Image (cartoon, rainbow, N blue to C red):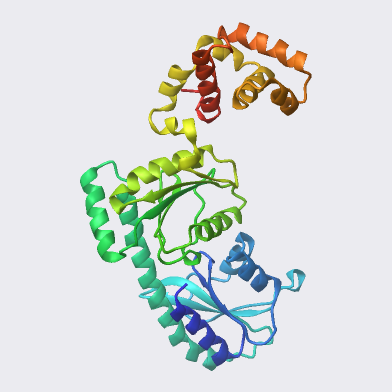
Length: 366
């Protein structure tokens, strides 16, 4: 959030003597200022969740605020505990960039007073328009870093060095959701470069920017839309020209992460093979007909995976699976019969372990 925008909101609250909130046109919170202790659930929810709900957005937009060129009064709704408020459109060059909201249930703000506040809205709109344009330009440049064309990546790296000069080495992060949910850029550090590419939210984080805090904030912004988030990280990424490879590695890490989990490329072990070949090729390479038969038996598959993960320790495997040792021995013989692999042979164990490690992350339709 730009300090200038915070200053504008505080000036508006002082001028109109009412609590003020600035949101962008997608109802993401940009800044807010208190004036007294007046609050209602809509304002509280916006501040806590950094955006208004879709229900609130739809209710307010029915009053024509997206097309309004002057103040719009929103009446109270006692059934929802919503106080009356005044909406001042934040517009520049006939484009609405956001809304300045004033809690004004008693309608103390006169038309003349609201008009005096409009220059503040114009100033805010100019700043938001400029920042939106800069972010859009940087977003396209970050997308170019992920291009398959080396010359495009080189040009984008040069342009971003001139425009943003991010401190290297970098961290490249990928946040994946089932659908490409919007990520509120106003709530991320200005130094973080972002883009949406092939359904991945890609973040390029400079050295001086705290990575865990940035990722936590980005994840929360997506999770607030009830979207499960898988996060992968690759670091250190030496230069902007290396971001393409960093993205490919970070997306593998995200692919293997559980919802709500962050996985680092450096911790993936054999799962790094997901970067080297397509799913069909890996399936053909790692799965024998016998292993395919094993995969049709979930209990035996889990037994084999646990046994191999625990380096063949029978006692620990039986304890982990909560079964008797004789039951485990019976299952191990069944596994050998199905796979035609010997669990006492190092190469056979490697083949089976590698297949079972990769299979949960491979598309089974080829």
